Image (cartoon, rainbow, N blue to C red; front, side, top):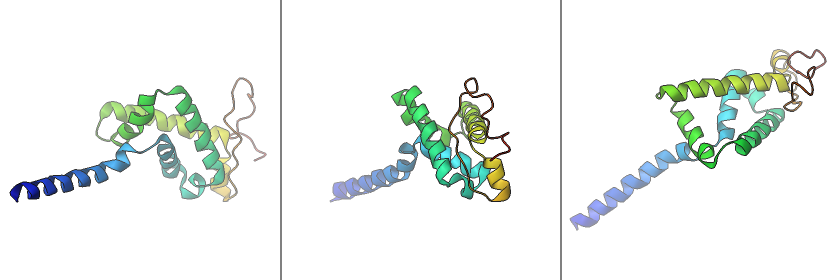
Length: 140
């Protein structure tokens, strides 16, 4: 009888640990991108349909150039960035890249200041479209 109680207790502990770890192990880069936008621009901007398009395009780029291991491991490690110094540096670089890309491909500043609709123009190539920076465009 004692062995079965021990087995049940160990099973319950393992199940609890698996439930606690699941959000960390299943977090995708899309979740990280949305979190970065929410922290820096607020929910109204980050949850707009145009932000969805930006996140989708950046995630496609991420999935196209990243190894299978990076796609699984990095979003999990980024969650630990306050603890791990090298992850903190990598996370800061990711945030900087995402924020700058978002500013250059949307009218986020104008939408934030005026309460207007967020417009996503797509991630442009600065060499093909040198004047296509939405951050500096007055017409948006």
